[in-house]
Length: 169
Image (cartoon, rainbow, N blue to C red):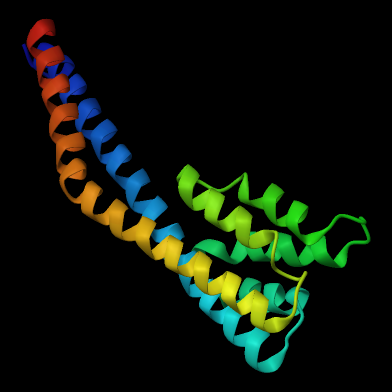
């Protein structure tokens, strides 16, 4: 009898875990976007006021930037220091492909990559501000949408697990 109850509880727990994993993934995407917004503010300040070169900005963000993006900026700094002959936009774009971001956030950041390091400081500042505003809108939209969806994801997954447990019982 105990074994049967344990076997029936397993799908319920698996369903709850699956829903919690979906909600955690959505939370990670929101955290990544917020980290990008913070990093862009740093880059904007460095480029517009101190005229810091992008490799130095990337190295500083790798050392002390937002924690979820330190690996991204470490790889960017390494790629910028390597004599590979690739332009900044292609390096930036290839590194963005590995990030777990929504497609619209990736598009905003990819567009920014085509402007960074290419134009004067004021034009880069404008591009960073435009990208930051775009990411802010995306983040606000995700927060609003995910507030109700996170509970729904966990609830539906738990219900599916409970249904599977009933079928097994």
